[in-house]
Image (tube, rainbow, N blue to C red; front, side, top):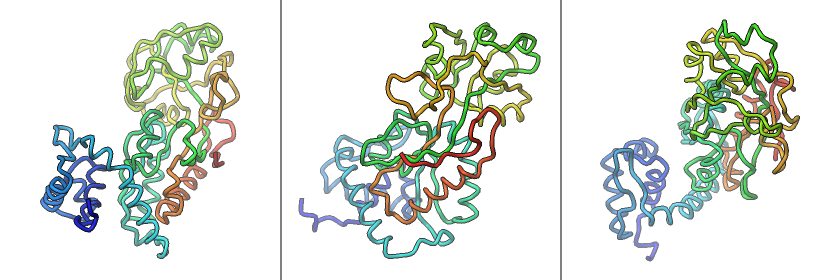
Length: 334
C-alpha cells in the first residue's frame, strides 16, 4: 500500500483504539467524538481490507491483522511524538498528555494515592489511566504500547527496557483481634497451626510464603485465595485465618479495619535478598521491592521522563513502616 493513499491521522485513531479497546475512551483520549472515531475506523477498515477490531461485550478486540500492525505503528508514533516534544520544554502545569500506568495491587495501594495527589497538584491537565498489571502481563503491555510505565514486583526486563528499584517492603501477618494465636508464642509452629488466606490476582495457590516454607520441607494450610488485598481485611475480621501480605499494606489495613498485624515469626526461613533482586535458584525472600519499568523508546519523551522522576520522588517520600529495613525507598537503577 502506498502511504500517500492513507490519511496518517487515521493511525492515531488506530493507536488509541488499540490502547483503550473502547470507542468512547479512544475518542476522549484524542479529543474526538464517538462518531468521528467510528468514521475513522470505517475508513481504516476499507484501507486495510480487515475489520481490525471486533465489538464484544467487554470492548473492542483487535484482530490478528491489528495485532500485527500495532507494535511497529506504536513505535513509529512514539518516536514522532518524542521528536516533536523534544523541541519544546515540558511544563507540568500546561501538560495535556495521556499516560497509562500499569500497577500491581500492591503498587496501586502503596504508590497510587500519593502519586495521584502529586499529579493533580502539579499537572492537573495530565490524563492518567491506571490499569492492573502483574508479573505476567506488565512487560508484554510495555512492549505493545498498551502501558507507558509499569509499577510492581516485576521480573527482570529485556535489554530494551529499563527497571528502576523504588520501594523496599517486607512481609507482615494480619489477623483479627482476639485470635487464639495471640495467646501462644509467635513461632513458625503457631503460624502453621491455623489456616491461611492468600491474595493472588492470578488465582495462584503458591505465594512467596509457600516458597519459603518449601526450603525447609514445611507447608501451610491454604483455605482461601482472594484476588485483592483490600478484600482480605473484612474476611479476616470474622475468621481465624492468617493473611501474610506486604507490610506497607498490612499496617494501613490493620488501622482501618481494627485488625492485628505481626511480623513474620522469627524462625520463619527467609533470605536477606529481597524478592525481585535474587538470581534464579536462590532462596525465597522475606522482603520485596517495588520497581518501575519502561520501554527505552520513551527514554527522552519529556512528559514520560518527568513522570518517572515524580514517581521516584513519591517513593522516596513514603514514611517508614515497622518491619521494613532501610525505611523509605531504594531508587537505584537496574
